[in-house]
Amino acid sequence: MQIDLPLIWAGIIAFGVIMYVIMDGFDLGIGILFPFPPYDEDRDVMMNTVAPVWDGNETWLVLGGAGMLGAFPLAYAVLLPAFYLPLLLMLLALIFRGVAFEFRFKSRANRHWWDRAFAWGSICATFAQGVVLGAFIQGIDVSERAFHGGPFVWLNPFALFCGLALVAGYAMLGAGWLIMKTTGDLQAWAYRAMRVLGLLVLGAIAVVSIWTPFIHPAVGARWFSWPNILYLSPVPILVALAGLRLHIALERGEEYTPFLLTLGLFLLSYAGLAISLWPYVIPPSITIWDAASPPASQGFLLVGTIILVPIILSYTVYNYWVFRGKVTAESGYH
Image (cartoon, rainbow, N blue to C red; front, side, top):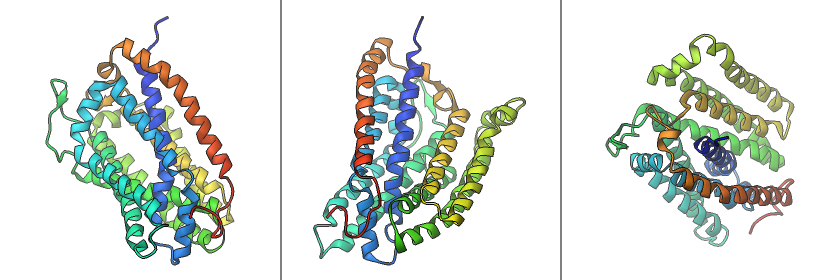
């Protein structure tokens, strides 16, 4: 039996990307929300909720990028020059954000500057990721197996809207995390923020879902042709039900459900994206099989990945287990 290595690697990279989006998404969301609580003590607690886990969350970004380079070098060679500027912005923003994480607690006199670095680093990194996603959905101009376009191919209304939508989405994840991890006034503030952000995110999902078929008629044909419309209808139905259940959870004051439902919305959106673009790794022309590295390379890399991914998952689970529970002003990172 022949093993379809490109298919396996597509699954590994897709898993790494969604793990990054989920796990780094909520701590970037904390940074996006950072300027808005009324008291500086609340910002201390917000940062303390993610201090033990934030840097480990970015492991998945490394897995996705390194996996892309090793398993699909053509995709890496096309996508990197297409998105040099937003990716550079993302990396610089993550650097400022990481430095601010450490320096904010040490430099009392200049704390306000590190607050701004943490917040703007989170916002800019998230916005850049959303812009890259939007431009990727629109498609990349490829000629003779190389990127054929200008440095600002990503600068268009759809990509910019996706950037803003992802900022709202990560902020929603951050609000759900705060509801789950905090108490008192900060938790009450997070409930209020979640109500507004939930409406924004559901609206953004609807806009992107309607806008995408206009950009790619083939995507519209995939979703709205018969019998596909019947088979794929559970995705938008589940999104609507998750939104309704989120409203009920917020009205009841549930603590864990809002965060879990937000994760569900991200997973459903990711599933919708996969359905729309499969099997293209560079839409609309290059499939995962076209972009794959030689089987010997993919097989060699797969052995190491099979060993490393369970180790990463194990220490991630252990880390979250150790630092489970509520965070208060008296506990955390100083």
